[in-house]
Image (cartoon, rainbow, N blue to C red; front, side):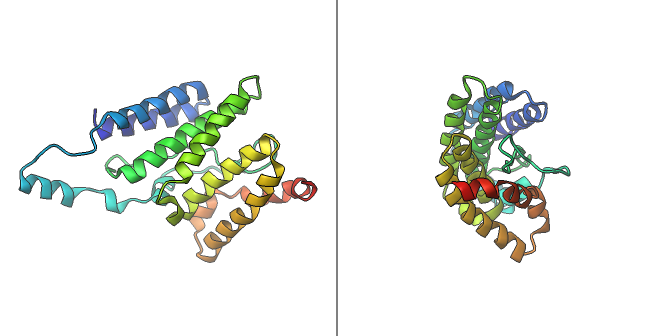
Length: 217
């Protein structure tokens, strides 16, 4: 197994999600995580010159979560679910030459969480099970060390997890999250992050639509 195999598998997950084949996306996202787990953390012993060359040519420092997210073209229109609250439902791709597990792992987990979340939107008897699994995965990636430094990635994880609280009836928890989400949103506005704001363009509109819900909670 190699990181390229993981990246390719993640791309397959994205293809399934875009085709709305969410069950296949769950299987694919699990395979990507399993592939990553099978790759040793330590590089095999190498000649010093080879090792220096690999480090110097590594693309890892060039990428951030935000940059990975901005690789995706976001179409016009709001991302909403049946509650009329904003949901970020775009899977995140990985650059073909990224090598930093600190970026790869959270993105794979997010895409797995998203696949479970979207399956749960069918609202059948298994929806609570999928929502619970999605929340576990969102929570896992939210507590990653680096995401707080990436406002866009931070926002979408926190937002989608809060949305699950709303979907299962935890309106008080969801309402408490809104202030934090607005704060992150305003940071992006203040920093004139036009591209980033395009990714969450439905947030303000859906916030206004859900204000009566928040006020009643």
